[in-house]
Length: 482
Image 1 (cartoon, rainbow, N blue to C red):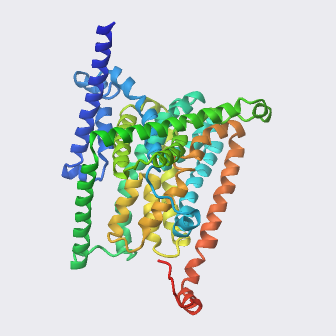
Image 2: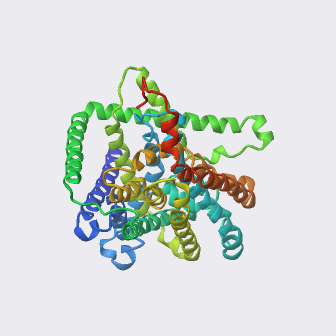
Image 3: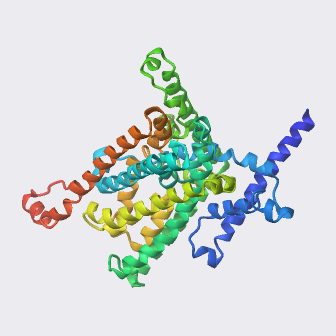
């Protein structure tokens, strides 16, 4: 028995070591000038390498160098586990402003982001109603794939694998991961084109190497070096272990909340009402709230939480998640449903580009290009993608778009883009039916659209009078707000 345990431990140890080697190779590959110019994340490059050496690629074309399929079976389960860690870290050690203050800072970006997300459900629902289901024989659940893949990304697509399986739509997981990969690549390519277009149209000035600009970047580099030293000082074995325990506590609390919701559905009253949704909800959205509770309990115990350490744990988990999700996706499922895949991908891309070029100028009263770019790039790629292009068009953060975007995420991620709405979307399609689900999403989409254009859009007109009105009505400031 001992020999069997040693062999099992050695197998899993080698499996993790091999996965680590591919991650190192992926992050090394993005340092090559040609690859670096594509702005591909190292985790995505590692996933592409894993896919290249898999039985479904190398096994067909280069059998001598393929990796055993046994490893891929093990790696396939990792995304569904790691997404819980990523969401548990989301709000750990992150300051939460009062809701009113966050809304005043990020209201336009919340409206724009919600409009994009709910629009993805509407477009997916209409596409499923009139094309995918009646003509191609696809599952009605395909209506949720655009939002899951584009807005949610690889983590959400892979994390929802148990839900896909429970609802009899296992191929949806591979379609979602493939769509997430496509959207990220398109986000990087289109982002470069949009930035250049914006400079030609004078929506943004190309950064100049002025003395002030260089001083700003030197200060940023100095701050990053200081932060790096501070983080290195904090990464001690004891502190790292304590933060791993904190994250485990957050996941554990999320699991308790999850089981509690499932227990509520088992009560006679819930059965009589017909409540049967939460048993299909995955664990990871609850881990987000578990992180908030764990952080509070941790502080009550007199312990401190280091956000840089939490970021390290989250970043490592997300990198492994993306690499294994891409590396283990089934190309056969995508090939068998290529028409569906293409329709969903093109619809999602066209909708986000339409939202940027047509809706963003009407929903942001100022700096529409910068604010629209960061949200649109994030909706097709990741948070890092959005910030990457925002830095290119606003390197000194003169528009305050970073602050607005950051607080927008706090009002955005608990619901869509991997939050509760994303997790509930497919169970609700089953419970309500596709026509009702699409209609409800259409109402919510219209509400956010009208709020963005009619309320935040009107601020653009009023801004011309705002300085005179505020200066005339301002009282002598004895204790000015800062």
